[in-house]
Length: 294
Image (cartoon, rainbow, N blue to C red):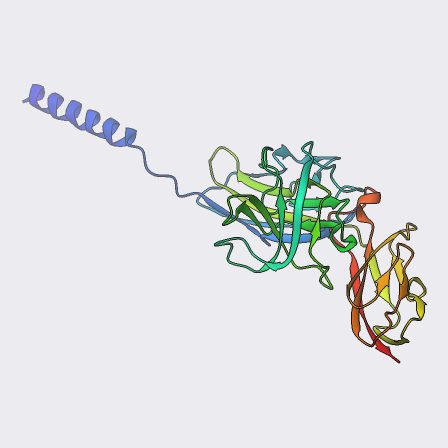
């Protein structure tokens, strides 16, 4: 009887050990809010995490660096993100621009905007959604700025395209120039000791703004008008502007507009030369209307 009881107890112990060795699927989850934010350079923004299924601490990181660094920005153990003092440097690949087309979209992008076609034969991995494309040297000044990439991929003609929001104006279709990409900033929160992780995207904003004191004006045919007198740049001591025009007339690099010989309308675009200084990954611009009279 004692032998049978001993065998029963041994079997029970073995059963309990086997049951204890069974693995159960992890139920730890985490979310970060908001999922995206625009943060002024040098300022702070609070991200919040909500974790369930674990009492472990949350490790915050910026672009894969725990607690961040001076290049990408810092983040505290409670999710308070502090942006760097200047924009992130552009990535190394410089790609020639074939053309820039307003009011166009990539196939299956799910949104509308404008498309920048880039020359083939380059590594395009940095021109990814959420990153910034920086354009310079295009035939139309309105394209020579920085834009958040909405979508990227092959177009119907097989060439690589980058889709952005349509700029003010919009500028006429432009050709030529070069493009670089600036990385976005990814905030990550991970429950330590688990694979549970959630991300949020930060867009840096320099705080630079372009304003105009008069949105429309009337100019006589064949007359000139200095539009630089109406435009002001705030948030920086750099006052350089790229001028663009859609419609009748012409405007030079100093903002001096020349009306045509016959009546018509035009839209003048003033865009801060954002590529001229390490200031921001966002585009600052303004448009104004012109009516010509005899």
